[in-house]
Image 1 (tube, rainbow, N blue to C red):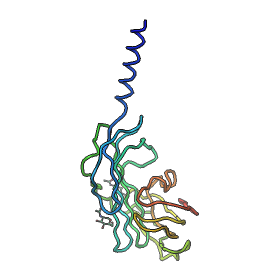
Image 2 (cartoon, rainbow, N blue to C red; image 1 turned 180 degrees about the vertical axis):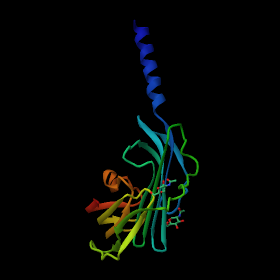
Image 3 (cartoon, protein in one colour; image 1 turned 90 degrees about the vertical axis):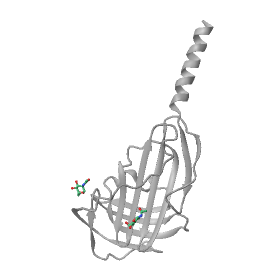
Length: 195
Ligand SMILES: *[C@@H]1O[C@H](CO)[C@@H](O)[C@H](O)[C@H]1NC(C)=O
Ligand SMILES: *[C@@H]1O[C@H](CO)[C@@H](O)[C@H](O)[C@H]1NC(C)=O
């Protein structure tokens, strides 16, 4: 009887260990590549790579995050995109499910630049919660919503500032909200509204 229970115990220990992946971990707030270290995940987590490209005018900031993360079905497969005024934000998340499968270089797939017929009011300001609309912007690819955001946030490696942004956003943007972004972090959210 005891042998029976201990073999059940060993068997379930094997199953549990089998479910926990080992993934590469690293962060770089100033580029799309980073030196990784491998370490174990918690149960139910997968290996993930998230790339962000936050461009305002000529100022392009790239960041990368590798690690363990529970699969979040709200994150759209592929690309999160915001575009309005001088802002072009690209977020790309790739999950995989084998030990250290996120060790390689990940690149953002080509952005679908085809206009989809939707037009949104566009504006952007840093240092204030109210921007002045500068006309409209034509939405592209999977941007099937207009977004208005205002709050305190920061681009990777920069201090927190007041911002307001209006423009096009990926379908579902208001379901997953700003919290899925990693390089672009939020301290205070006044408005995050999709229309
Ligand atoms: C980042 O986004 C800008 C604006 O869309 C684009 O010109 C640039 O090629 C992108 N860079 C990378 C490395 O994805
Ligand atoms: C690109 O976006 C357009 C407009 O939303 C869409 O009709 C088309 O199917 C998309 N192409 C691809 C390859 O996803």
